[in-house]
Image: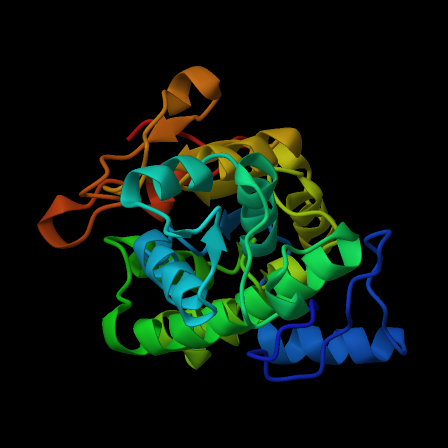
Length: 309
């Protein structure tokens, strides 16, 4: 049985952290077995289904954009005297270019110049890695505060994602996980609000961006998830929404389904290697408009996933 053993506080039992080499730290094997027993009913998994969070479980990219802009405004951020504001169109491109919040800001400032703010360094532009990290850390912390407030009032699940997750959780032969590039504080707010404690307690793997040393598009998070569920990469299906996520999945040699957000700067995901691309409005499908089911994805007796839907 796989283990939900990455350090996310939504789990019902204490969980070991992941080291820079990707090995879980645990006080004993018995401790790991206790986590398994409390967290998952998976037995002899034949496949794994791994969900990204932002953009897959919840259409959060616009919520993130608004929260970043609120943080920039809070600190009065300017570049050459012009307030820093990320437009919808720019953020769509950014979301398909860089994974994780802090890397997004460092990428933007690296391309456009580091900002000035009266709140830091006597109003001077950050100079050197130490000051740049101090500024980005403060911006991210304030962004997370705004993001939590926004999530509480606006976040809802995308079509079909909780239905498919429930189908997978109910099947003891399918390991289920969530692998997100988001920072833990914002990630936990989303999954606690939308996925819920009952589902989370039954997952085999839960990982946030803080749990890995390299964020998407690096495949590390999916490679670690594969190790935890104990399956070869070709039996681990990833559901993502962006090029960053697709590259992470393909880098781990895992087949990937894309559910692009309506606001995405939509590239040709199939050309880039996605096994299937959902309609940006229908997603995985719900009610009378179901598209992807567990039975279609993992047919009984099949050795490989199927993407005929």
